[in-house]
Length: 102
Image 1: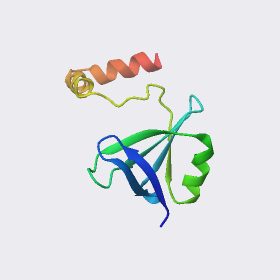
Image 2: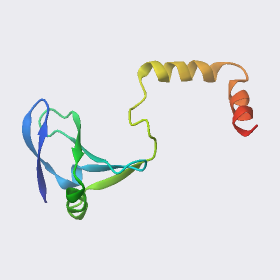
Image 3: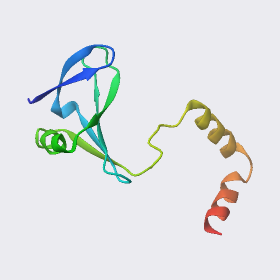
Image 4: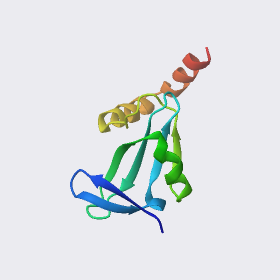
């Protein structure tokens, strides 16, 4: 199995199997990151990836995920809670559908 030597912010230099790496391609620009679970602390780490290394990782078994949302950040707990509350309001889903299709 091919390994990639990379950096974890908590553990320093680590080696990760290429099959444990996910290449994250953003559809709204040309930048690419890669993500992996650290083999020492098990935290998910995301780091920038140069274009010249994308193909090498993919050839060695890395997975690819195309990101098509230009926000680039995950939802916060507060956003999830607010969304859940909004869904619980009577007629909220129907009103939103009407707004989107209207």
